[in-house]
Image (tube, rainbow, N blue to C red; front, side, top):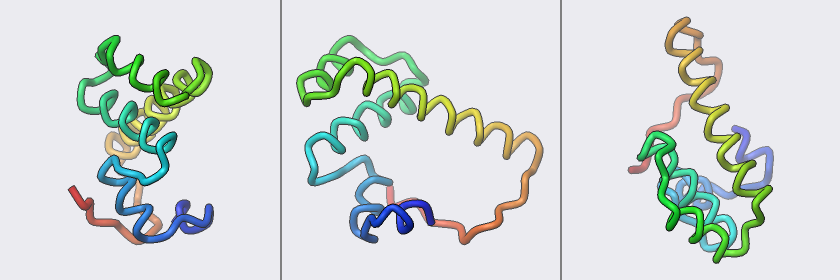
Length: 94
């Protein structure tokens, strides 16, 4: 729903769910976010360097980490308190 409101196409959203994008900067953010989730925050120096090499600033790297942390936090709250889902569920493409 948020992706549609931001103007993303269905193809772009499906790619993002799989950690892919045709846009190099978006792909770098998605790669960093995916690494953070898969390694539970224990990313390597190479992960951070890859983001820098793709042109992300230190601020953008920190913002990416913050967004991932906020989403994990929100998911924990929703699961722990059994918050009802008020939008159409999306089946992951992975």
